[in-house]
Image 1 (cartoon, rainbow, N blue to C red):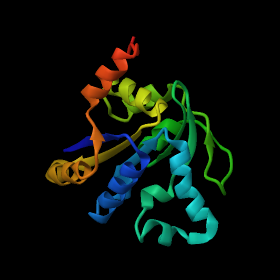
Image 2: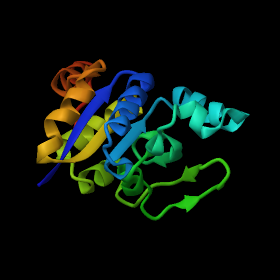
Image 3: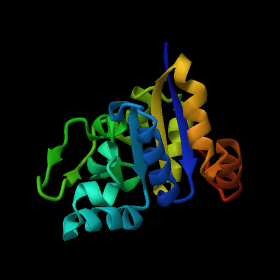
Length: 180
């Protein structure tokens, strides 16, 4: 059976390092997604590749997911950078705005929350993750078979992540109402 294991990161750098570790552990990059609201930090990765460092050098020999980063505008969230199967859900019926930059504009009719829910996240998590992305956090999600769940959780735990219930409480204390 396949399930989704996810981690919410304060920084794009921690999310990026976790993805690199997942790929190094031979988790198929088709099963890894990265979405970040920290567009500026993620752009530094793109600038390294575009500046001529080459994808192999910038990624240290891995980086299938990271090489696929695309800029999206997700309704209710704003600009995010995404790669992987969640990016495909967020894109929906969008228009590609430039093959050389990998920029994608728009989002599916359901918006970010609907796309995350359709991708397999419970509605309450989708709302929280969308708000966290809006606030510049980063989400890594992995589709994984039961026998690799422990390995994936151990890799994600190597990097400082945010506890979703603590994040929810903090946002609610600031006046965020969550799902209506």
